[in-house]
Image (tube, rainbow over the protein chains, first blue to last red):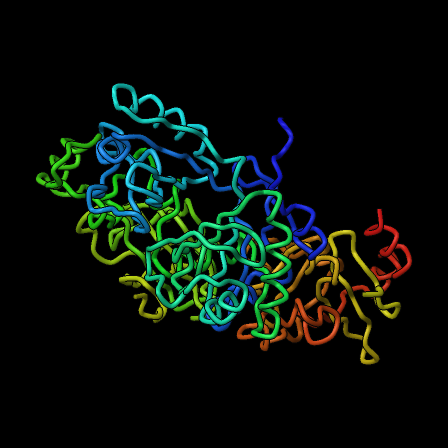
Length: 365
Length: 127
């Protein structure tokens, strides 16, 4: 097995008590003190995540926007410098290659942030499909560290560290700025459902930046937060995770991401015909979120059965909601399956479907 | 956290404390709770259940995974810690105090002699 890759903050994380796990080939902090406490800190105060494992792909040139519009399902034509867009990128059959975030840095200059576990596949896919467009694709994953500052206290923590006017930075927008002496791309994005920021910086600046954020955050009750809390936060918010709610076999329409599939946008895009056909035919199965009223975690892979006891689907993600104190999750379930339940160690547990988010999230403007 | 010396220990990371009335309290060690991480659910047997040595008596579940619990000695369950139903995190905070799981009336109290002392257990987890 090849050695696990480490982020520029590996030493910082270790010094701050991180427990590490292999995540997509990266040695990443899963928790520092407690997943549940880190989760609650993000909902109530603030959390700081090292997400430097994420991949960054730069797409530049006169036809960069036209190419991206062909590549992804959402409408890239609506982007302008400083605007950020969430999208899926599909195969011709409508299955998802990855979900991603496009940061428009200039009219001909885009930074695409992709999942770490898919980064190599994505870079190859993007480069292959860029052929014939007047644009350049570069894998800059090693040139960026990424810190996510998330939670209601984020702005109060970050503003004293930068001259950038954070009040003017709207949700899903980005700007360049200096934070604690480090040049950053500051974005109002995140994966927790809370207000917050993601800071792209040079790897050499990552530790200085993390220490400054930690020091500024401690009076506000900021906690370092690992991938464990990141996963339970995103599930509570109802956000998809690649390999779970979306995959090469689950289309964005099935995942409830129809809002990022612009079937009628000007540009054709990869997967459009298949997604149109699926839309017209009706979805055979879809992702539905559930809660149980019980503390037993319903883990990914658990079969879901209907009232007759027949298998009608499968749990795709499951955890204990630290805010609701009950098991929550997502399942891929046949359309029209009716009453559903799962077996957890011999106990039948009824699933109550929920339209996420599971908790009240702040308005993000 | 030091390993309390007034208990016996199993290699499967349960602790046992012999009480003056001849019953035995059983729980999991600090080392075990620390490896499991945030504990979210503890499944225990019913009062009156008869356990054989080495028999699974329940499940302790954390965000990460669910793990079986094993009876280090045989006996009859005389009490379970109901408080863990709503506050399983007590096992993380005080595994050998408020985080006890069940009280057993041992079938054969000499079974305890075959288990690890605090010093031996400390050696086991130090390795």
